[in-house]
Image 1: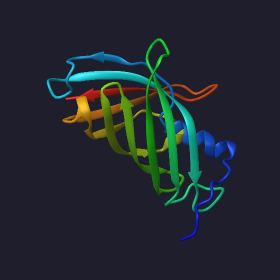
Image 2: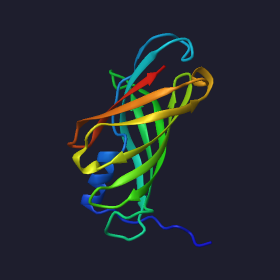
Image 3: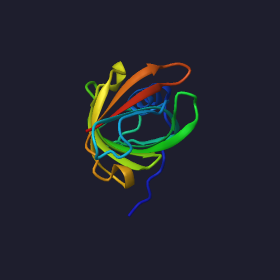
Image 4: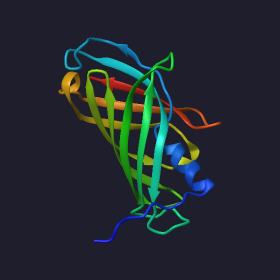
Amino acid sequence: MRPIRAACLGTATLATLLACTPVAAAVTDTGSAQAGDKARTITVLAEVQQLTRFPVAPGSVSQGDQVVVRSDLFDEAHNKVGETHGSCTTTRGLPDEAEQCLVTYTLPGGQLTTQGVYFNYLDQGPFDSAITGGTEEYKKARGWVHSDTIATTPKVVRRFTIHLV
């Protein structure tokens, strides 16, 4: 097996990746202490700390490209409250890019896992992903995560609204 080497990112490629990746945030928790008790909403901001793209064909976005990312999560007072760890695989290249992503959120009280397909990152529009499971307080978690881009300069900032049902 050959080792995978990290590729250098061009400005356009990096901007595209940051536009589709969780980036900056605020923990606001409404609802019960136990995710399984009743509906609960958590809001966080995410800031990318590490992001690496492993392209199939350097210089373009192609089917099979891989992205690995780690972000810090923040509350409204910009206190760090957790992290995200994720990986995405490009399933459709440009011009209508699509990526299948798996992301784990580490939060006070446990972890949440999500999965979803994100389309056309260049427009930096909102996207949703399904909550597929969790640990500790979130062990029976179900619901979805909605992501909105709230800033693009000097870096991309995203707000994640976690809907537990």
